[in-house]
Image (cartoon, rainbow, N blue to C red; front, side, top):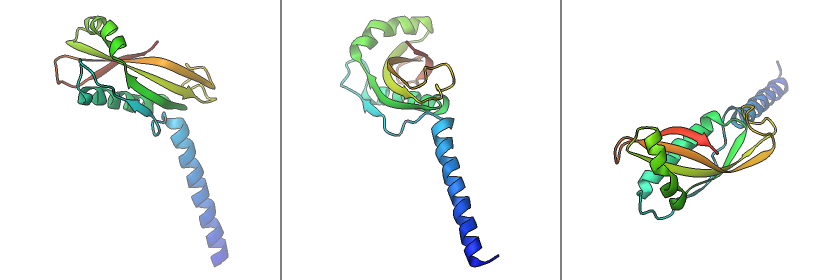
Length: 143
C-alpha cells in the first residue's frame, strides 16, 4: 500500500470515528455541557446541599435523557418550602429538596416518552435524604 493510500485510509478511519463519537454523545446520553445552573441564597439549605442535589440530577439527566439538552437547573426556595415537607413524608424521609429545570428534546423524542422537537419548562426533580448532611437520593421527576 502506498503512502498516499495509507494517508487516505487513515483520514477515512479518523473521520468515521469522529462521526461515531458525535452521534454517541448526542444520542446515548443527555447533554449537560452548557447548563445554566442557579443556586440562590437559601435559608433552608447550604449552597453545598443544593449543589450536591444538582450534581445528582445532572448525572441522571446525562445517563437517561437521550437526545435531550439540559438548559437550566435551579433551586426555588418558595416552591421548595411549599412542597418539600409533603415529598419527605411521601418517601418516609427526614427532608426533601425540589429542583427545577428546563430542557430541549431533539427530533428523537428522547426515549420515546417525550414530545420530539419540544421544550420542557419547570420540570421538577425530587430528592430526599434520611438525615441532615446525609447524601441525597433522587426519587422522582416530572410535572
